[in-house]
Image 1 (cartoon, rainbow, N blue to C red):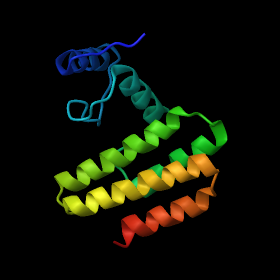
Image 2: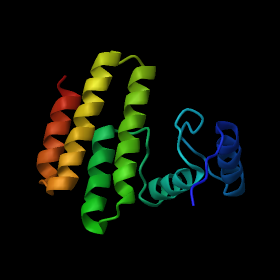
Image 3: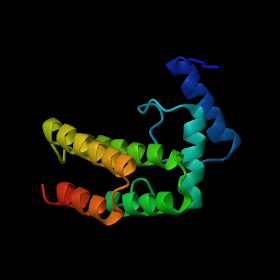
Image 4: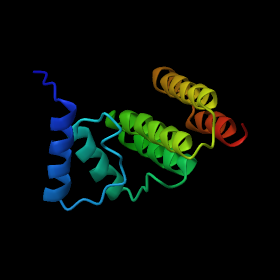
Length: 137
């Protein structure tokens, strides 16, 4: 069954989850269109694995990718995509990159992640190209 929540209802549910579970979230759930279920999963995952979403993007990416390789949890694919969305959202907010650079880098990461999962590419190769793209451009 598929349910569609209005933006207002989605935010209300997430805020009640934060209150009921005493969460201290760094996720801008009002901006990101994430479901309440994924929000709760994300909060749990980040907390359990001691990942600060506002921390170093490359280190967080590497840690999540390593966890994926060990656990084969497909939810971690969405966490990686969310992490990159969050990183580029902050980049745009802090004006560290132009919109064109953000779009180019975000597409680059999404394409390479897709290749990694489809073709079972080497994790170190993926990290290397992403580091190169993020750090040196």
